[in-house]
Image (cartoon, rainbow, N blue to C red):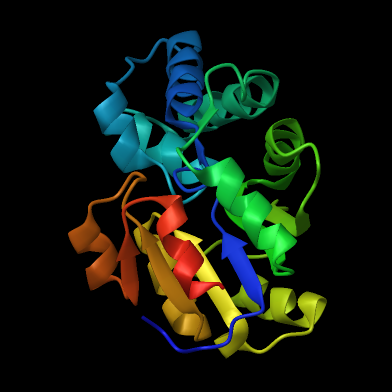
Amino acid sequence: MSKQKFRIAVFDLDGTLLDTLYDLAACADKALSHCGLPGHTMEEYRTYIGNGIPKLVARAVPPGTSEEDIQRVLKFYLGYYPEHCAEHTRFFPGVEETIRTLHERGYLLAVLSNKTEATAKKIIDRYFPDAPFRVVWGNNGVRPLKPATDAGYLLLSELGCEPEEVFYVGDGDTDMEFASRMGFFAAGATWGYRPSEVLKRCGADALFSSMEEILPYLP
């Protein structure tokens, strides 16, 4: 177990705090169908998500789809998903209790997602009405997405902390790459959408099979 003294706990959203896969997939299928394109299975969508909505759409359309049609799918999705982003989304086991405990222990909490920022904030407000998070950031069209480190350095400035004080929890390869580049402790969430071997290969300092398992690292 790490002997570091952490002050900040930062969380990815999709696949880490909340199981958003069904809503992401259902809305993507709706966008594809609207544009006359075939949909995908849930397991296929599991491999498509994690790098933002434009990447999701690019992976979901058939090979050879024109740029014009890709943009049509993307436009529909961006208009449809915010209104249907919480129909089937649910907490992963232990998330509510763990976030509450960390807040009570005095840790600064933040969310850093690659989904659009307005939607990320809407979902967090819906599922965490007590607003324990000091920062909820997503794709605002300005900050490059993870694994780029821009948002990480802005977060350090916003919260007044050093990289070694940050415990970062995420389920994706981009999350582990991002945390490693930043010098954060990279906690791989194996309850999410990527296999443990991928998280380890991409820089995870430790792997966790449930949210509660992080609590001994953050006493």
